[in-house]
Amino acid sequence: MTAKTRSHWKEYGTALCATLITATAGTCYGWPSPTLPYLKSSESSIPTTEDEGSWIVSIMILCSAITPIPSAYLADRFGRKTTLLIGAIPFILGWVLVIAAKSVAYLYVARMFSGLGYGIVYTVAPMYTGEIATNEVRGALSTLITLLNKVGILGQYCIGPFVSMRTLAGINLILPITFVITFIFLPESPYYYLKFERSERAENSLRRLRTGDIRLELKNIEVSVQEDMKNKGTWCDLISEATNRKALWISLGVFTIQQLCGSAAVVAYAQEIFATTETKIQPYQESIILGCVQVATCCLSVVLVDRLGRKPLLLLSALGVGLMNGALGTYFYFDTTNKSSVTPLFWLPIAALLIYIVCYAIGLSTVPYVIISEMFPTNVKLYASCVAHIYTGVCMFAVQKLFQVVKDLCGIYTVFWGFSAFSILGLIFMLAVLPETKGKSFVSIQAQLRRDVARDNARKLMTVEY
Image 1 (spheres, rainbow, N blue to C red):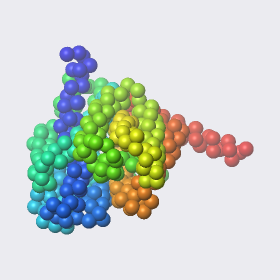
Image 2 (image 1 turned 135 degrees about the horizontal axis):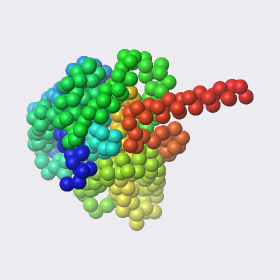
Image 3 (image 1 turned 180 degrees about the vertical axis):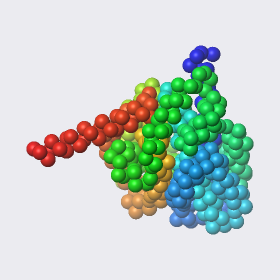
């Protein structure tokens, strides 16, 4: 075992247990793909219309926008660990309701509960993983959030087509229960303890997360927290402080690109999208291939995010998904208007979607959660995470709900062309404004933002004087 391995294995183990809850969120996210075709079929025990199906998909994400503010308060008052444990409860209730479902209304309520848990998890988990990690592996640990989410989605693709809806829900119920049993024994974030001047508890927590001398690191964390807490953070500080304002609009910009490139629709409607193609492979088999590629690429992202950096991965990701969305839109356009012209290209949709998933998973899927955990000081980090998740939830809901509407009104090719346009615009945005944070401490990231703000102000002043 190398020194490098010895110095970080506790961090990876803790983060892996913590992110089991995001695997649970992934099961909820991917569940509609194998389930909707059954619910809409004549064999369904719960007959479901197209419109009801789109609500089953999207209502979870809509409800996920409700819990970030309460979970921000809970994480700030009672700790990140306690809040994540509370977040498991709505997931458990959701799957129990799916097992007991007798009508679409039951499924609506079940998805609402899952959405409440989803909002808690994605508000608090990025903060917890960011705060337990050293600078060298913080990016990798933060990407575990998305990796485990994709594992949960893949589980739905692999198991869902072969078992009943209620059996699948019973299997999914195992994950949040396992999370509670394992995570309850793990340490709280040392940043949380130091925020309330509980130095002894912070030291004990850090010792459980590290394998060497922690005195220097503990002192650095304490200085960082004290610096951040000189002025107690408020919601208004996100707007009133120039560095926070810049970090917020950069973060929201990255999350906008993440959602408007169409990822939420592709994951939720994967099996139905594949059903529109002419390939000889069954739609559920194509979905499984898609999920496997997604997980494999997320694993690659975990390795690359702390080697290549955040910005290069995001730029490559946005370019790739933009090109593939354009290719899919063009294929479906000719498939609708002149089917014979694309008959020899029956392989193109699955090839383009696989490349799309590779490009999305390597950057846009994982790195935004690293960005949100790094760009803000401790005193407003929860508020920023909260705002980002509410905003992301609204965007994701719009994408999932409007996918079916725009597809029915304007054709599926219009949807993919729209996704392509947003992806390319996002590429330009990130190229212009996104800073690189690889390997930097929270203190140095804040210093960089202050320099950027000062430079921006100087440019504005020169423009006015001119």
